[in-house]
Every structure is written in structure tokens, then in C-alpha cells.
Length: 80
Image (cartoon, rainbow, N blue to C red):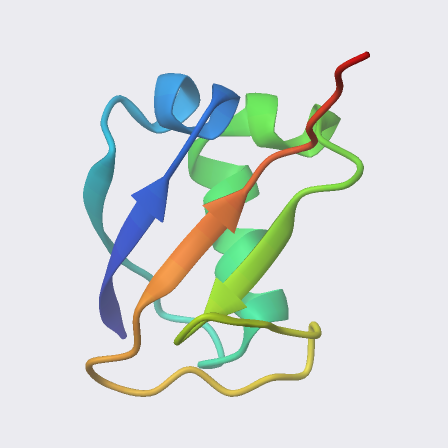
């Protein structure tokens, strides 16, 4: 499946841009997407709390991804 990822914060740095086209052969789920992303971009493995939103809703690993879905990678945020 081929999708456009919207990346912010450190994920933008790891992927090399705010919007990135990404294609993977695995299952069209959040878990399949993340597994493929971690293989292609190993630094993502270090982000223990990386979240994914699909069409403005937080998604679980089992959530299916379909053509045209808006996928946002949400990195950990800290502040004080």
C-alpha cells in the first residue's frame, strides 16, 4: 500500500520531510505500517511513545489503513 505520511517534530527529521510518500508490502494496518517504517528508518524504534492518527483520530495497532487515509505520525512531546 502507498500512503502519504505527515510527520512532525523528530519524526520529520528522521523521515526527511513533513510529507513523505511511503509504500510497504505488509498488512494495511497501523502495526504493519510501523514495522515497515522502523525497518526503513531505524531511529524510529527509539520512540517508545510514537502515536499514529488516521483521519484525525488516534489509531490502535490493529486499525486498518485504506487508500486516501490521512496518516499523521505524532512523536513524544515534553515540556515544562
